[in-house]
Length: 450
Image (cartoon, rainbow, N blue to C red; front, side, top):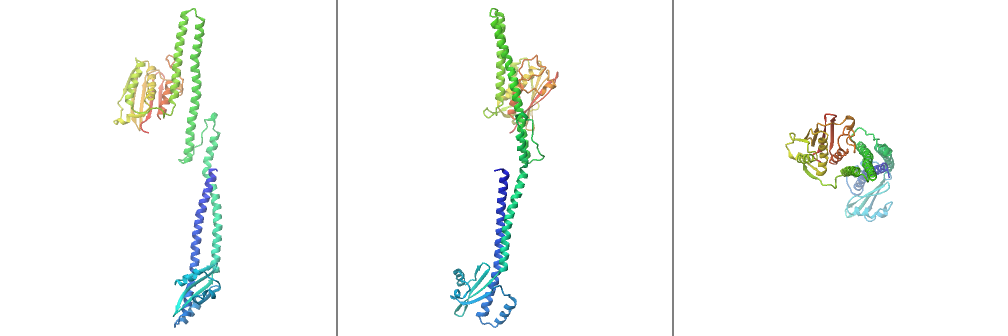
């Protein structure tokens, strides 16, 4: 069943329950008030008749005159004064035993048959007990109650119908944004992931849902583009060394009698095989850095200490590099330097950035600074190297992309994409600022808490 129908049905059921309870409340108290008033009028007549007809009193004439003058005759009013035990024979209809049992108990008894009412009580005159019963009809009150009953029933069904209509309109109105979202989402496919949902102003659930879908589409579009670029670039990068190896093998086979050419071909094959191994290792690193991190070991690491380890490892690869770490902006609270990270991956990510800075700086000074601000830990790496052309900066994090001015440097364009994947895995971000011929500054931002 659709949500709109469920909401409408639930709304109608709740309305029916509330209306029925209210109608029952109104009917009960109206019925009780109308009958109570008429019974009291009958009971007054019972007492007056008993006083006038059973007891000798000098005021009886006055009572009778007042009775006739001020108490109007009720419709079908009848009076019965009978000896106790003979009441069932004298009345116009047989009354239930419970009516007489209440009279015997000394209380005023009441009984009603549709709109005909009876009230009776026992009186003692000397040694003789009498029962005084007064009966009358109340056609006006009964008709009013019947009319009220019909009105409540009609009002109940009319109110339920209106609540159903209102509920249907209300549910459709409230679910219209959701239907629009569903309609828009159905239009989005792999070939048009650039489409986005309209996000209305406000902070309600529908706006949040649309924004969440848009965020998901952003991630999907990025993933699709990255996958397409990755497959394209990986295919090209793997094909190149394989083609060279294949060509060198054929060349070596043709120069069996020339050991020197064979040795050169084999050396070339060895270099390309190592290059192929390096590319495959980088591809594996990229794939592993895309994991969600649940199956990888996480630990609390002091990031300033990790920077010392990274500096030592980079200097082993680039022994002539000059690296300085600036600790002047360290926070007073040491806990702000400790992050829960995957140490090996984080070391690999920052090492790639520092290694690139050392490689492309032509042995100029590389500065590393660390600071904590607004629950974010910032690690900046600045070099005075060749820089990155402005047209290349937007592609620098694409796998296997290399800037146009890096032809004299050996590399595969995998380090920065791998670092970006690892930093994102830790819910961080990377910012880059570079000017060709001046240098490059890369800043890694990591959340301290959460």
